[in-house]
Length: 185
Image (cartoon, rainbow, N blue to C red; front, side, top):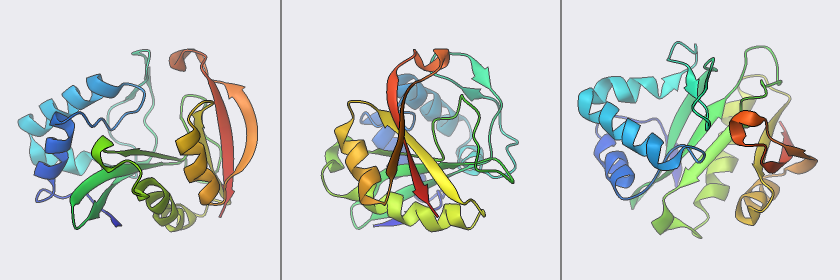
């Protein structure tokens, strides 16, 4: 499995995954999938181009409670192997600092299609994302997960993560309890 830049020729596999129940946004879930399918139908090339936004020129981020926040520099990469699309990794950062605003759920997020759970894609994808983040000059990355998401915690630990704190997310995230991990780069 490799992390690849989204391309128009791979877009049908991504759209198919969205139609089959995949969602790129673990917080906004089905709403985000519907929005992305509409964007793909309206302008496939613009959609693919929007997934690589290192200058943060895209529209504001929509948070789980529907509020909006300034976009961060970001890049999406797709998990791709002999079976095609397996999920995605989202990289987020702020230039010149490892700090993230309160509304940002960590430097690296991921989502795997349900029919590929348990195949190690998330662990491999997180490992492949680390050099991408290191290239940005960050000393470390932070990753958060729900307190009860043992699978995600296992992926983070397998990639060298150490637990930093147990915390409550802000109001946009419903004050849910979570865990913050850090991986030194």
